[in-house]
Length: 438
Image (cartoon, rainbow, N blue to C red; front, top):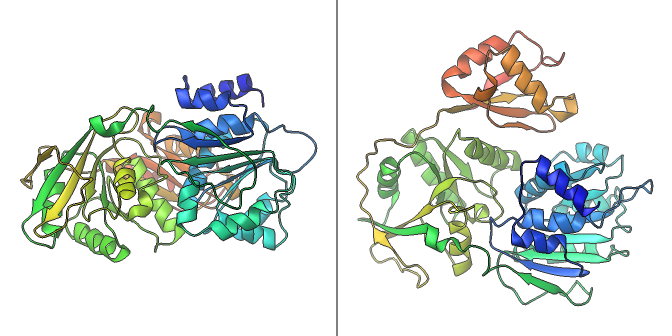
């Protein structure tokens, strides 16, 4: 694509101005780029500008570009950025937890761009369902995280098959000098925006909350009841702890979700969707949520457990104070607990357990048991909720359509009436079951 066409497509998505990093990638001429920038700085759009200029849709049906990311969530976020901009191109996302049959069907028409996790992509290659020998542009997004998660062997096997590779982009949120050994592609030009990008520390307040006992659950509960309404992520170090904290918050009738690597992919994605659309403004998570989540307006991060490293501290905190917003970092400490030297407090706080505007949700999420494969679109669902459900257009929040299901955010106080109103009616001549997620 031509750069002017890419910028026009970007503008149509509501983005009117590129930041300096994105402009730098738009005009980068090197064959191999190492892009370093903090989380939340717009790296995905930056490498998309570079990638799309090197992809030419034509009648020669072969895959032209590949993006590899370490997690399903990151694959889907990249897909949501690239697909609306890649005019005239087919973009496919491949990831674990997704129906293999659906992926095989979508690959029956060869895509121009593939976005994939390493394991799922290698699975398709082993089955002979893909030919990647024609790919000329490769992006390894959050490549250090992929190495950390043990994907080095999978990525090495994939890259050995890229016999036509001309351009490579590596991205990372932190400075790393080590380029993976399996990349024998020559010198990398480094674009380092880790310092020049707006550092969010001055937009964060780091607050100590002391727990009188080693078990911090009561202190956490008091803190949450003290906060004004906002989005909050609570970070713990273990899956078992996440389950325990989440169960405790459920007993307190707190609008919370749960997110960790032991959950099925669909459970994890649904937890993020409900957090993003406002149905559950509190998310209990392990460090799986510390990187790659593109959710704005998170007002506070709570460290229930101490982060295990400086990097974990940085990435957890990077979920808030994004896009020039301000955020508060709460660290719950207990007597005798070692405090890492990289944690410096701005103030301390003793929660009262009361708030004039407590954490709550005015949003409900409706679930539809039909999606893209049933030829259902976001517009179809919006029209259904307006014409059959009696909602005004401004009352409908985010609609997300999956392969065989969809969800829509609507006012909580109207959810029951809307479900009752739409139940007798078909959606686009399809009998669908609409229920409220709880």
